[in-house]
Length: 557
Image (cartoon, rainbow, N blue to C red):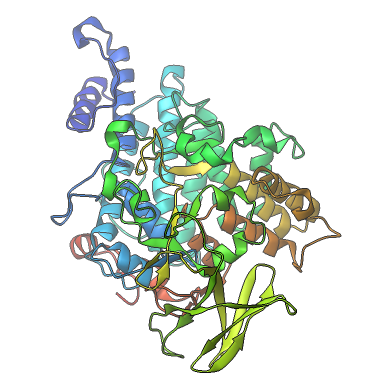
């Protein structure tokens, strides 16, 4: 134990001014220094958790400026899951359109808060005694938090590990007082994350509260993600098997919330949640919440909708709970009309301009079991594969949607509210955003099994997720019925897309697999394909960092 009296003074100073953690403390003169140490350590750890959700002023922008909000938008909005229905003054616009600059509030706030939390975690790691059982849980939480922050930073501000592990990563901070700030290689950052998560898992047991506190399984679950990102597939499988008590054929349903439709509203207390950013009723951010951009209920903005392609993927099985519970089409009058329109992307062909969702009255051809429409006297007939309609329109092969005539539009875009980030305690804008859950961990293992040619286990794990989602037995996969897919890895990737939609995974899943992001669907985002090696997939190092510390800026900024 290092300089106990000094540590107590320092941590109490650090935690002064942080949001209350709703804990009870006794007068210090009635306690031993060891008890004060333990309570002070818990306070500073709770301060780390609080920093994930507190609104913090940055560059004069206090409202809605939180790590939590920015992370979930910066990780999800550049993907092919979402359609932005109009221009916004919020920096989420630049994240969505790949027009980031180094002086944006989201770019700077995420970096600043991430390293503040790392500093606080390091102060605990340097002081607590891992051989003291009374210190181990909080110490493990500190290792977990240091790992999670470094992972979030290196995945947003650097190239994927699989693309170039020798590329410039982010500063790797493992001491409280840093004297030499430099960008460590991506591989070095990942190696330290692995060490920290293994240490965290060894020190921790069950959560010391709700899922807003880290635990042994949270550390192992995050480790399974890290191994997947690194291409260490056997290690990913071994980690998940360890979480399953050593049995890869264990009953996976025991780890999943049996009521998916209400899961996200109750994430804090659900057995499925391994770690979330726990919010209380008093911490409802209203229009500044993550959910407000997806859902206008309760005064939200409701400006971000699912992409055409994602909706079509869900609609292969309309009974899918992930579709019926969390994606809500908005109709004039509240119910869909029995007349339909065809919505097509329409704009300047061959350019990276936005495409409006132009609409035409749909006519049904019963003999051909398809729809057609007229534009300027020309008849266009749709083709259908699974639930996806396409049309050759003016020489372009386009994905289109056939929707009830009375669907409500914002600008030209059909409104579909997403409710994954709402309805905790009945509030449309309140949630405890899920950072890690068993649904992901099972799919981490499924992908790792697929990558190692163990198709039987890969499909078994996928089917567990699909069964919980309400997909009928006829829609499950087997080696003799792949439902049109030609590879198991494609099955897994589509399942990850549907199961984890809007939770901040899709961008990483596409680029780490060296795939390109196809954004050829209506929305304000550019009509283009983003290449996995395009420098714009990395966020810029904040201006306030590189101009002061002198670390190298990312290419293109």
